[in-house]
Length: 330
Image (cartoon, rainbow, N blue to C red; front, side):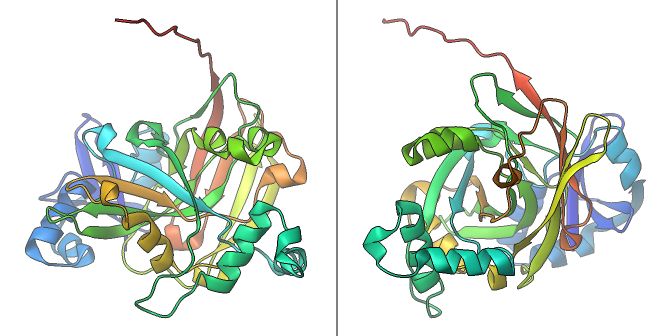
């Protein structure tokens, strides 16, 4: 099942089932958040509740998208109560990439870079037996709900950034119940978007490089994630022509960690189990245009799609002027 959030022509919010090219409105719920809270309260699955609430009112998906009325698949009314985080060095990539990475992590562990040590740790201990904790992944914070862009919206890069590069990923979307229990609402395709040039200057700049916008959606995949997900990441020039294109691979068959292990190491912190909060957690990737020496320019568009997630995620790169504001002492 795929769900989308959108606005009607009069600006009213709605959530609906995506049935091929048609959005079927839910009758009782206007947000995914409200639907998920009801599913928790009623002890029903999200899919069961959504299917039962689908009404006769429909909309053409292409028309809604063209009008810029699509929203992210999950959000919070107070953006400060939505965490955006992620993990890295979790994916094995294509067959060629896997072979290359295994050669890099072979031999004496002390001779490896910190990144390769982390990757090797994941390969060796990222898929523990059920009910046990595996090795910790790399973890980072990106921002709150204010940084998340829906498909059709721009990804805004600050003018001090050295790069604005895509990261085609799957994100887990979660709500924390009133009892502090995390609930996975579903999954969405995303563009985690980072400053890779800044990161490459020094790995300790990773935290800075991640404080950027991200793209999410357009659809929420309800239920379990397929074991293997194949998609395509593209860079479109200002005229809409494909400038760069490459397949990406995700799902646990293509990862060094299980989803459960990544979730455990995020939600083991009490800070992330505050009732009512939303969490958007990116699971990582092994496919980047910057690895092929592509520098995406303002006005160009990122396009990320995977058949399991329905329509593509598209975001145009935009640069925003920033200014330093001196702190005033009180």
